[in-house]
Image (cartoon, rainbow, N blue to C red):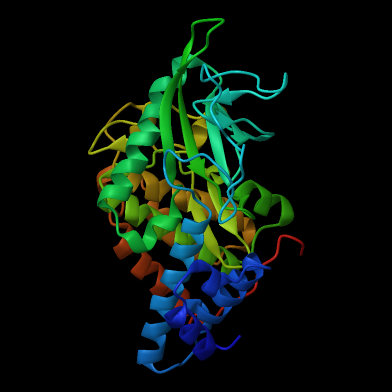
Length: 356
C-alpha cells in the first residue's frame, strides 16, 4: 500500500470496519503502519508528511481502541460480543463449570504471564486480569492503577499507546481465606516481546541502528509519563515491550512508580544493580531516574556493538547524582537524534526481526 492510498483510506473510513476490514484486520493494520510510519516517509513534501503522521496516529489509536472494550463491560471480543463471555457469577467468584473462576465479572482463562508481583490471566477481548500473588502487594497494584489513570488524564493522547490502558480496577475478597486482593484489568496488545527476548535473539549485541528506534520510542513513553507527573521507577528490560513489525514500544508494569516527586517503593528482586543511587537510598526519584535506567537497558542491549558516541551518550544519562543527569525526555530525544544523525544520516525505516 502506498502512502497516499493509506492517507485517503484513513480519511474516508467512517468505522473501524472501514479502516481495518473484517476478514484480516491485523494484516490491514500492519499495511497501514508500514505505509504511514514516520521513519518510512523519506523526502516527501512536508504537507504529505504531516498528513501521513496524523493518519498514523489515528491508525494506532483506533487500533488500540478496537482491542479494548469499554471499562466495566467485560463481555465478548472486539466487534464480536458473545452471549456468555466474562459474565459475573452470582457471588462474584464462582467456578462456573467446575474449573473456571470468575473475578469481578471477568472469566479467567489461561495464565498468560507471570510478572514480578502478579499473575496475568487472559480474560478475552485482548485483556489481561492482573492478580497479585500476595495480598501484601495490594498497595503496588493500587499505585499502578493510579499512575495509569494520571497518565491518561494528563498525558498527550497521541502517545497513550506507549503505556498500557487500564480497563478496570477493583477489590476482591476470597470467600475461603478472607484475603482481599486489589485486581486490575489491562488492555493487551498482541505480538509484543520484551527486551530480554531481544537480547536472547541477539546474544552478541544488537545493531545500534535497531536499538535506536527502541530507545527513541522508550523516550517518548517516558516523556509522556514525566509530563503527567509520573516516574516509572523500574525501567528494566522485562518491562520494555516491542512490536517488531511496526516498531512499537509499550512500557509496562507501573507498580513501582512514583508520582509528583515521591520515592520508588520497592526494587524488583534480582535487579538491584540496575537502579541508580537515589532509588536504593530511598531518596525522591525524578525523570532522571528513568532516563538513567533506559540508558542502561540500551547499553546492555547493544553490548560491545554500541558505537563510542552512543556509549558516551548513555554514560551522560547515568551520572551518579540525579541532579547531574538529563531530566527532560523530550529534550534528550532531540539530542539522541542529533547523535544518530551524525552516525547514520537521515532516519530510514529498518525492518526488524527476532529471527536473525
